[in-house]
Image (cartoon, rainbow, N blue to C red):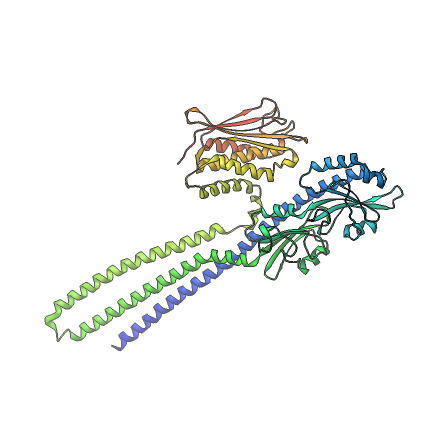
Length: 559
């Protein structure tokens, strides 16, 4: 009796320690996974913010350079004129106003004399009364700075809208200060552009000058401005740590302070920086959402192990009690031996059933743990090979666009490829084929429905052909038309063509544009040909001048 009790207690302790060990192991595993997931979310957010600052700086630098070119051309036209001629010449005003109309994203040209009085503006003729002697850009040029500069954000006295200026100093023939000439840019243009960026963990985007506590243009998702367009006070002030870093002349960097991550980058040679804030609260929320499945799975595993252990303990205790009672009553109740044996056989049968059920539950629990580990392995990113994915990001983006349409649509197995082409054209106009550089993307598409697999391959093919066109078709400035046609033909076939009117293919016919050997690796055309074979499409290349036309003919699948 004492030996059996001691053995039962020892067995109970063993099961309890094993259950506790499993629970601690799961907690440790969940903790490690949680830390890794948090690190990956932070790394992804910082990488996206850094890419956004590069895009913002390139976009702003092109706009500033354009405004400075307009200012320099206007300077040449007024250099030999007196102030009376500048102020009263309607022909001069018309020339400058016509020059301004070429750039709808710029504001107006403003010319102030050495006393700060406004002498000419393309905003109105005759010129309204206004002075700029108290503006920071005026005092900077009056004190001797001749090069182009970016002013602080201010409210226009004539236009009554928030803006800033790209300005230069005007000198007379002897080098003395004559006045200031500048081009205004409304902050609303940048705010609206910033609002189009898809940065889920961003709290605000701003463009700031070193030393300023308020941005000259900004967009915030934290509220405080109608339609998300930031005005004074809608975006937090520039933190002191960022101002110190900008004052030190750092071209780019990442700062972490007060639960936020701030990524900044200088806008080309201009003394202005693009700043992206990553909201720590949004990062925490996404982290909690990502960790929740791991936590729930861990709880399920622990509960399953505890349930199995409890059931085993109950069964063992029941067996021990049954055996003890049988041994105590065996001599006294010989007549009931057959009944006791029957009960024992029933108990053994129940034990076999419970063990089968326990094995089934253990199998399911192990499959769940295996799935969790598999998901974790897929999420890991090897830093040694991360850089090799930069060139592939565009191709991955094409696949992501197809899936986005799949989930938005009514079906998860097929989609209307015309909608995908419209999205792709809008994206290319912003990134690789901007209208400001002469690109004209023409789309003529029928509502052709294709399977998800075909959509992925066709999306990558069109992206590769447009990228080749952007690189090689038009080496010289001027109009750059590109034509994309998607037509359903008789018999169920579909024709997809991408054409340009550029320089065409070289005599070797290696698939790149231009009259010189290709500068690329040729990977793009290999991808196009491989994917064409994959979806059963025939590809034809028409080299008839002008330009080149790639045509794919295929039969769409809808399942």
